[in-house]
Length: 100
Image 1 (cartoon, rainbow, N blue to C red):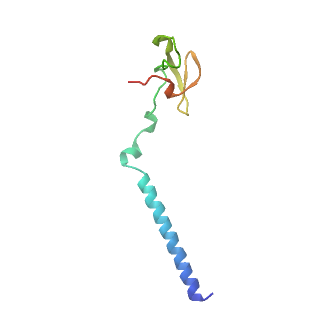
Image 2: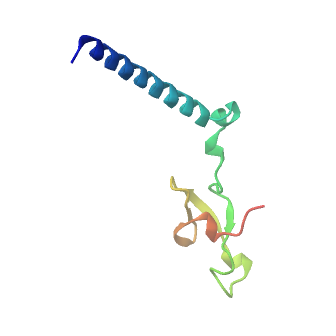
């Protein structure tokens, strides 16, 4: 290979790397969102907290009154599910009547 050809290929490789890095930087910056989204407290965005009352949907416990389907949240798990006082197992948000 000629010395000039090697230099040309080296410059093309360097330029391709620079364009790739620039594209990755711009894509990352685009996906970061606004300042409000960056500094928003995501820990506050949970659907239940310990001590709250949660009522199972009537379809899951047919024939039971609302008071019989209501339980207190004991613990919020990292997966977003909850454990309840008086009801065994882990439960998801879909199982409950929406909070108002």
